[in-house]
Image 1 (spheres, rainbow, N blue to C red):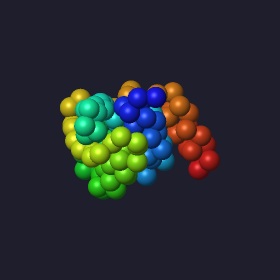
Image 2 (cartoon, rainbow, N blue to C red):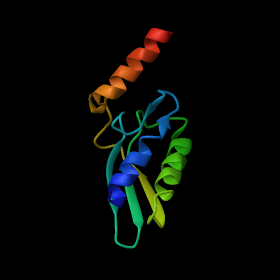
Image 3 (cartoon, rainbow, N blue to C red):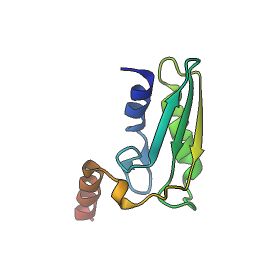
Length: 104
């Protein structure tokens, strides 16, 4: 598995604390690039720009990516275009959200 793919996999363990679903399945991660020196650039968004847990999510993303072998440093850029919408979620995220709603 290459470093970029390993980071994608690691980010599947990072949850959006308010939704309880991982940020990859939610469609919050837009792009990951890793250069030959081990510098990782991650472009992502949040469900809303004024997310009160933004710092926690970004910190968790940095920690997960930095744990990958070969990654020397991580830069996370929050972007607001394209704007996130529920259409970015994959089927697994939709099922997890439905299951949580049924439990309430």
